[in-house]
Amino acid sequence: MTTAAPIIDLNLMIPEIFLFLWACLVFTYDLVTKRKSGNAVAWLALAGPVLTGILTVVMFSAGFYGYGKAAGAMFEVDPMAVFFKIIFLGAAFFAIGSSFGLLKNRIVNHRGEFFGLILLSTVGMLFLAASREMISLYVGLELTTIPLFVLAAFFKDDRLSVEAGIKYLIIGALSSALLLYGMSFLYGLGGTTDIWQWKLEVARIAGKGEGVGVILTLSVITILAGLGFKLALPPFHQWAPDVYQGAPTPVAAFLSVGSKAAGLVAFAKLMIGGMVAFWDPVMIPNDWGILTAILAASAMIVGNVVAVRQSNIKRMMAYSSIAQAGYIMVGMVALNDFCLSSVAFYMFAYMFANMGAFAVIALIEDATGSCEISTYAGLSRTSPALAVTMTVFLLSLTGIPPLAGFMAKYYVFAAAIQSAGASPTFGFLYWLVGVGLVTSVVALYYYANIIKQMYFHDRPSTSPITFDAPMVMVLAVALCGVVVFGLFPEPVLQFARQIPPPYELFQH
Image (tube, rainbow, N blue to C red):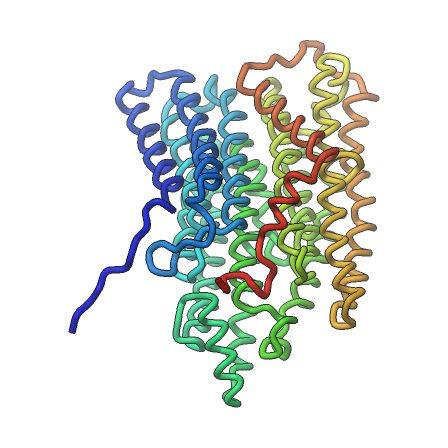
């Protein structure tokens, strides 16, 4: 009996390997300089996502990407992987860039650990984006999440931060257990961990008349529950407000974009790539589409309605993030040629608006020590440029034209309406889009409340908010992204349209 080692094409893993080594460099540099490097370690960490992003784009342009495989069939790079890698790296860039203010008085020691953990979490996201197999997908998801447990509780002397870390750890462990439990059922059905081969095997079993209904239903429920925790979809959302409030603000921002996008990739690969409910008759008796639509509607309703009552802006942004997950899932359940491309563009636009808004929150928190919405009173008089910038981010999150957030909502809703008009099976998407439109009006109310505070209320303190160079860079990039990709979305959409449709995902 002979055994052969799997063929490993490391060329396809160069961005992941590079960023991992860069994270090790950050750890080492901070250790060698005896934690007295000042902002240098932050600048070093900030260069990591930038260089990895350049490397990713250059390799894709040079033909290293496409549909090659590495480590057997576990690691495959396609347009969806490349697109989401850019989102993950962008989220890491914004999170690190908005963390410089913490170095002045909150993170005096362990700066290398703080930035290195952000980079390691991003490495997990990159592996997850290119995974096409259940085990590698799970490992990538755990590498994404575990550093975030530590980051959420990074302020060890802050009761809220420690509470956030403990809650996130417990909920994360529970969601991982549910997800792994569901995957074990899928493996039992198909006898393989390759997602595409699993789908073909289950179809073959069903074609022979062998029943898979009960086990498949149980796996769908447990996987949806596990991913529902990752995406903070009601009723699995209870952890989000407390974690966002207690975690360092840049970490909360990274959670709201990077971690959410990772959950979306896992959802797309497992539920769309492996269990395309409406494309495959085998899946119809255990259809997950309507159940996911109910979760999406509850996210839009709960997130927006509860956000109205919040006085802490980080808790408000947590509920806003829950609502945004609901909007994204509208496009996900459309299951047509445009569903994944519309979801990808939504996350791309959401990254600029949400990370930009959190950067402003971090800046004001560093200056005032408060995250109360009342702190923003009169900001237009003391820091007019900052007030205008925050207004643009909030309007984009609402979906006001001509900003990127409007185009993002337009495309996910359009994808859903197209499916609803094409087949009676998708008729429920009409009311789902209706819920999205109505709740967007509710979102405008609590976003506009912050704008009202900035422009129509007096500020208790008259001292202006000061900017440092990294924050200026972060706000400028986020502002340009919101405006430019709202006016000219076509270049990004053209690349997003290269993402394979649901019935072709992993087929090559």
